[in-house]
Length: 363
Image 1 (cartoon, rainbow, N blue to C red):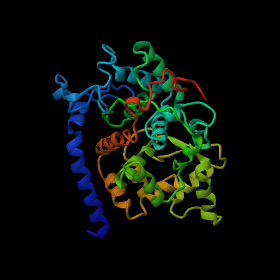
Image 2: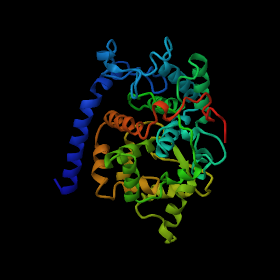
Image 3: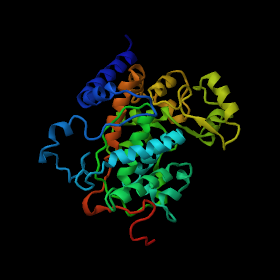
Image 4: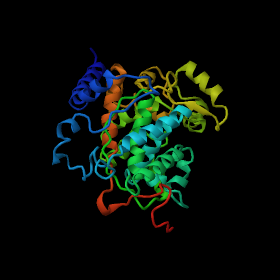
């Protein structure tokens, strides 16, 4: 066994051990009631925790973070079931909206933390920034919010809705369920210029690592969460330089698989066209993304770089070698961690009645 293989195996074992401690109960429960990707009844509550403590005050359901945060705030109404029902309705109509919701949650947390600031729709907001022009799914969050305002007025934050909707959308495309701690407050500030920090597929690995570390995340989180690119698509404008003029050479990136390059050059003649992020199974949440990297099928420059940097390569190879369901559980654990980035609580934020505006409407 060579050095690279040894390191890959080492990371595989570490990831496996970490997973067993956080997800065995979740997987066992979901596997017993497996349904088709677009017909899923999601479990509700903090798996492996609520069953043991639901009858005691040890859960502190009034405190962040807790999956039972809304149990007393919205009595007789299951907030997560309402969100799940609405997300399923939208995905049934357009399954391509699912990865858009996941991406929307990512953009929210990447700027100012998971505070719903990406949803604010005023002049100069993150939502109006150039890097946000291709974001979709705002209408889904508005629809869910309107329903929850009927059931439990001024109770459920837009930030919580977005976090739970991203999870539900991922599960509906075949991903594994993860518990979403609830209790976030909505931010009152959204500044478009701050959205420029969000990586757009052209950064080097060091820049990406520094960006994730600034949010309290690790190298493994960068590689694991990059696997979100196993679903969805991106604008051809993001890859034209790579397939036609890599680093100003007038030639394509030599790391691209030759057949894949021919396909991309036909598909992306115009910057306005789209290309699927996963060349093999773009609308199924699995670990094919990592297998694609091994075959030169990474679409964005930052995707393929994960396999050429010694800090990320062993992790990417380990994720490629495991079953998809196992990767799904690891992804969920990392998303749970990501969803807690710079969360507002108490009087730090508010509960918006309309996700597009702060409650004062004063801009």
